[in-house]
Length: 316
Image (cartoon, rainbow, N blue to C red; front, side, top):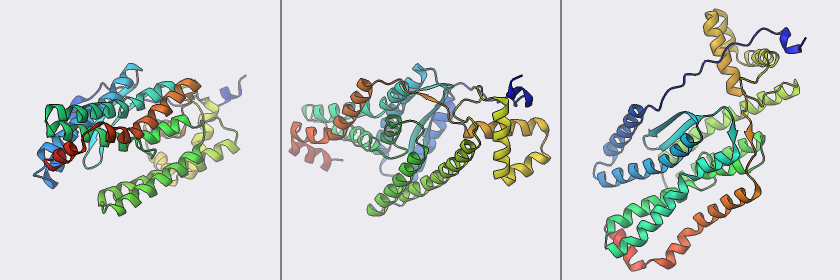
């Protein structure tokens, strides 16, 4: 008899598989615009340009997730923060992940670069301004800070199972964003950095919990579906012991409700394995493209008439 058979069957993990909710996406875009209009009522053209740039950027991520059959792919805009695309997959691939992340900033940089170059031939300050917005936002997004695309690329390229390293990486990112907000006198940037600090605290708790699981020889680098009954109940026991409020709640909750919550809690601390299937050529190509993108402002400096830039900026 298998040791796992001595334990009760683990509860079923119920995950709703919803289709892309475009109504929620549109609502978040409208809310995003209204908040900006409330704060900057005279900048309607800039706000609409910003939204269009973010939509095109996120559609790059969105289309790649759909191509690789991610589940529950959704796009949301967060007022004063930005936008993001979220999706899930049973098995993650390093190669697919690199393509999903790259599909946002790299095409945006190319679009922005081309628009700025052709703007002087069209004698169109607006084209330059729109291209500059494309260019600058996507360049910033490639800075290797969590949770920017540059940070995601960095995490995909480092060795797997480096939880403590990733926690430190997120902590440093938080401090740098707070520092940048202080330097540029941006309260929102500092606030965002502090919010990231809460995320770092959550990562720290997970690191501590995973250390305890490792000490108990419990396999947590797996999916919920592949998790053995034995490991489920052992993980559940450790989670309950470390979460007094959860322990108290499940004592009074209905059995079905308690099982659903416990399944969700156990699933949340599992680390879904990422298939390390990107070869050295693919990883090198991403790194070189990344370096070229970050260096592209220097190339732009030599390719465009600076008098035109000054004229276009003065008409911003």
